[in-house]
Image 1 (cartoon, rainbow, N blue to C red):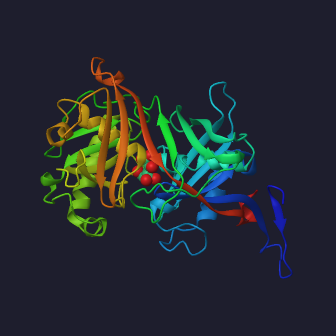
Image 2: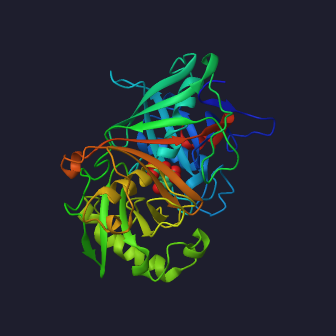
Length: 377
Ligand code: NQM
């Protein structure tokens, strides 16, 4: 079926006619997203976003007239095309759809969905898989950064089955390694977007950091919680959420993000002492719902903050010695392991040489989604 094939069933009329668009649904890490080839969508961003919002549905929380998952972690979109650059294989644009409003944002990266991009690129014949492991270099269009993916491809075919377990996903699957090389200042232009390791805002001391994801770290104890609560408990704590949103509004512009009221960044991360042998415990708001675990680049940013003398995380974190640090960032479903290669002599902005995480991904569906033809595809 072509990219925009008209679907006219027996009962179809002009008003009921729909357009079919190729789409794959892939779980990437602890998130699930709708993957498209760029060529299958309108090129003009506003027209494209109208189509995508129709695919996802809403603004009702159930998203009954769309295929959206009703939560930020299951309302994610990846648009992929062969790279026009010499140093990467594919370009990946990430779009986040808010579950309860008709808004769509390119303001952030998503490392979880990124872990599904390799399999999609191979399935869609944008990259030829080699026998063994296929290395795919991805240009992350949202921030201009790049990531190397190592995808298991025995016999030149993507292997989904495997023994790797990641906290927040049932069962096990094949490991995909994601190596980030240059993500400092992804959305804000600087690892320390306010120019400081600590800031005082709204009566609390915070650390603002962006090593792939703009995150505001806050001490859970400053907000009257332990930091060990479940996401559901925190999501129903209206006073906490109001306080977090107030701090977010005040600090957003100081992080070079402008007015963040309708933006998905910065994320708000409550930190506390680790309880599972990790470096620090986290509860992250993305930015309004509490994450069931933690985002990939969110965890890379938190781990980086733990290494920075003077940050509020460095007071709590127990950081391993050596230039290659394996750090487990604790979250509500367990922990996410981040491997940082560090040059301790370098200034903070250049201190992290690379960040690696292991994820798993699985294709769930390949087919077409339908949108009403009035959306103009
Ligand atoms: O931080 C959620 C997720 C994410 C983003 C969010 C992510 C990342 O878990 O790289 O993966 O923070 O919005 O998918």
